[in-house]
Image 1: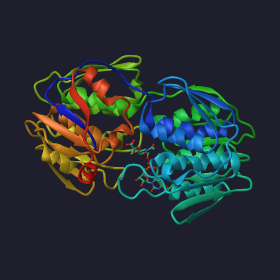
Image 2 (image 1 turned 135 degrees about the vertical axis):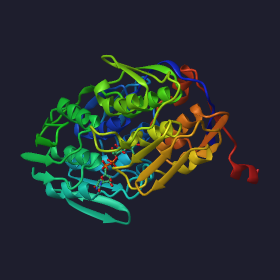
Image 3 (image 1 turned 120 degrees about the horizontal axis):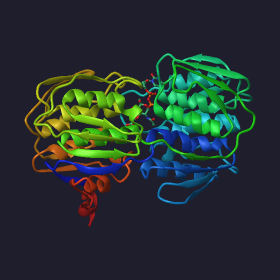
Image 4 (image 1 turned 30 degrees about the horizontal axis):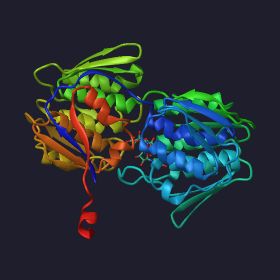
Length: 428
Ligand code: EPU
């Protein structure tokens, strides 16, 4: 079993560069199927979700050649299969993007219900509604979702809820549908825009990504491209919060400050100083104490749900009472019981957490229940007195490239330790 071991109380100082955006790349890699030719992708983050996607594409007959730590050549010309291997599909949420891409290119797909973070019920009714509106039939049998269409036809689709996944999946299929598709009430996250830019660079005709309405004129032919993934908004936000929470001073490089505005606003309200540059942002928490702030998570441009655990951790040691409302997921407060082990005083009622700031946290043995919960516990470990050991770190490594190396570069005392598996000990 692998753990992060953190000795806390050291303010983070120095510079860190963020990697490519996880939630963009996990859509863009499946989207290479639509190219039917070679795509050179750059600024790929070194995270385990990316590794699984490469394995899936290879298993489907694509050529995946890793050229450097951040670049890869993917050639999907000769894919031979429209089904994603079950064991790989279960490893991550984004495996469901193979539906949109395969429907668009081959008119059929089969993917077992996806894995990913356990944040409560994660329905895919809006994905299905979109595929059906484009003329596909969708079946769910024995936990596998299959789609089929003789010819996708453009349509006008109004999503009942704002969904990143459904917006992406239906865009992927619609780029090859005949005629015009209009998607309304869509997600506007930076990764939606990045995917649209990527698809357009492969010959698609998508307009309006980043607004509430996306218009897609279907095209018959797409082609390979060279593309660089945008920086990760949530990784950047995590370092911003870590810098403020440890009362440090960090320059975070390679970011798009506009994507970080909702996070910046809350940190400034809490008493941190934030300075924006063209492609960097400096966060300093060199004040005596941070103060309480209320936060409600919402789809972009609102405060991102994927930053909720991290900001709540900061607020757990801010002066006063903060109200944190989770506006996207049903069950994203599971990490609070772990923070409580470290001395946090937080009461949860449904989708609302009431955070009573304490003077400090204490190191403890805690468990990461999902990706951002794990990031929050890392921040907790950085600000706590004593040693924190975090287990189940595979969740964290799904989405943060070289977390240990980057934090050590900022002066944190964090190590990744491998412990022998208990079960193996018993048999040995
Ligand atoms: N929803 C439905 N029906 C659907 C789809 C979604 O009711 O068909 C609901 C969900 O239950 C949820 C809300 O709509 O209440 C938003 O879900 P969305 O579809 O936007 O989420 P997602 O696409 O499954 C992505 C990210 C998540 C991030 C959310 C919200 C990826 C691979 N995942 O999930 O990222 O929290 O958008 O921004 O892009 C993470 O990175 O830690 C993470 C969980």
